[in-house]
Amino acid sequence: MIRVLQVTPEIGPGTGVGSVAYYLEREWQACGIPTERFTMREARGSWLPQPGPGVGGRLAVVVRVVWFSTVGSVLASRAARRCPPDTIVVCHNDALAGDVYINHGIVVQAMRNRGHAVSRILRNPLHPFIIARDLVRYRSRRIHRLVVNLTTVDEAALRSTYGSIGPQSVVIGNGVDLDVWSMPTDEERLAARGRLGLAPDDSMVLFVGHEFGRKGLPELIDAVAALPDAHLMVVGGTVDLIAAQERMPSAQAMGARLHFLGAQPDPRGAFIAADVFCLPSAYESYGLVVLEALACGVPVVGTRTGCLPDVVVDGVNGALVERTAADVRAGLERVLAGDRAAIRAASRASAAAHSWSGVAQQYLDAFRALAAGARQ
Image: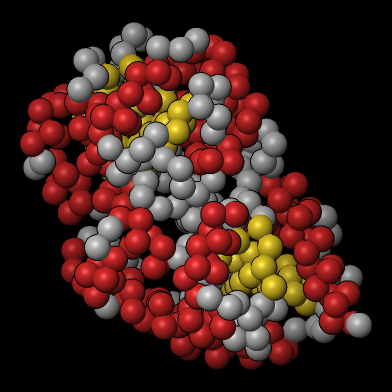
């Protein structure tokens, strides 16, 4: 019998890394696997401030990451020792504890992909801390027994960044909830577009993300600005980020065609209304939003990062592009000029191969192999 203890600051749908833990927990429980949580509450960090806009919000992120990486590591290790011997401890981020660590991203690689890596790292005091912490994580043979990378690209990046890796490593991608993220009826789609103020014939490009610079929103705005009559809906971002982006000349040139919706607790309405989803990101550890878009029948235009090279087939369910406004615009034009019905059907079909139940089974297979190795 296998039991699972998941270690991550938060667990819940719509919480980024926490949503991965949420869906895995749900699927494991459906298989009869007992699961428990070690979150910020168990790390005695419930009193810490929540991230928000401005300098205070950024400091809150630093404090929370450092707390869960230090105090959380100690308390999570103690919690693991109290678990029954058949328990597999799965760590998703920050804490240096657990049999299995899921690699949700490599800071150094993200900075490299954006250029001027050294200056970017030094401008953010959290980056050197994370790099030093993860050097200990990946070089040690005593902290984790297995590292799960979400893509083959990230597994290669892990080795090129940290050299010899102490734990074993495998690649297991993320999944998508095919019931929540589903193809809308024509009536549902028209209603969603109406709520966003779109006419039936308007072309709508969707962007979802909180880190505008890394995820390529400036390049996307430049691209859509050159597409007559196309609208761009932006979901995510803080008040400060949105205000800074709105001041850019290309954003002002778009006028009423550019819509900042801010953070949305449930962005499905925007996905349902979209004609194409675009993510010209410099770096993604995976990119759950890509699968969510495809599951809604929305084709994806994006760069060759994260899961995009594995799930997007150029000309079938989207387009793979370079991170320039000109190439993003060309990719959007190709998709918008295609057979809308055929490309929407192909998009949904490509997502169907990535259910959370299938992903959860891959993890269980890896856990059983770990358990068998420990008994030998």
